[in-house]
Amino acid sequence: MSFSIAVAGKGGTGKTSITSLVIRYLARNGKGPILAVDADANANLGDSLGLKVSQTIGAIIASFNQEKINIPPGMTKEAYLEFKLNEAIMENPGLDLITMGRGEGPDCYCYPNLLLRKFIDSLSRNYAYIVMDNEAGMEHLSRRTTQNIDALLLISDHSVKGVRTLARIRELVSELNLAVKRQVVIINLVPGGIDPLIAGEMDRLGIKPTATVPLDKEIYEYDLKQKSLLDLHDGSAAVKAIDDLMAQILQGQVTATRTG
View 1 (cartoon, rainbow, N blue to C red):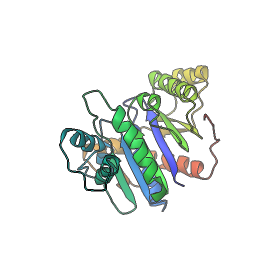
View 2 (tube, rainbow, N blue to C red):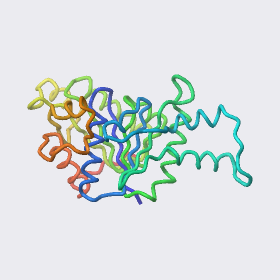
View 3 (tube, helix red, strand yellow):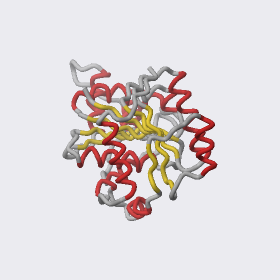
View 4 (cartoon, rainbow, N blue to C red):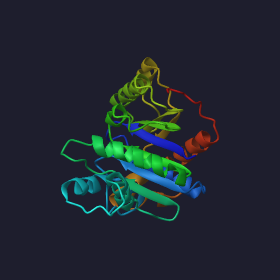
């Protein structure tokens, strides 16, 4: 049974960078095989991992719906679609990547989300770890794309708005009764210590961060030079913070918060 990790939070909080560093930890500690899932319609996890994406779930579905296809004899439409979806798996040693991409219309991602969830469920037995980078906000939760999760990493930047978004996400997880074993709060892009105003807001909302990740200029430099965060060196402040957190999670030192 695979161990599933999902990453959520508002836009601009560094979700994709955190996702990449989580994958980096797993890969460097021999935790594969790993399935990375870019469930954000504005896909950029592949770029962050240094992997070229040539096909997406959204593009396959759009092509499947628009073109007249000849389904091989003896194969159902659903089976043929699943066969085609396998073309979206970018295979690499110890690490595969699936990218959702855009949906059927300019604002519709419901059907690709549903298929993505079913497809991941069918693939899960082949991987030790599944790590999913979700779209900004809470839409993926309301559509129940993110469920049956061992660890939900809730990412906020060093801002009051980011912390308030985390509070709303936690409420939605509870309201939808999602099967999330652990909720892990991460305050990202912290310039030194937590500002007293942000600390006060967290106290008011009953939020206690599991980890803080320092503002790391090397993350910015790697992104600027289009270098893979998998290659970021061990001395990086952000790498150290995520490595410590992941060690705690996998050793069971982070308290489980069951919401489903």
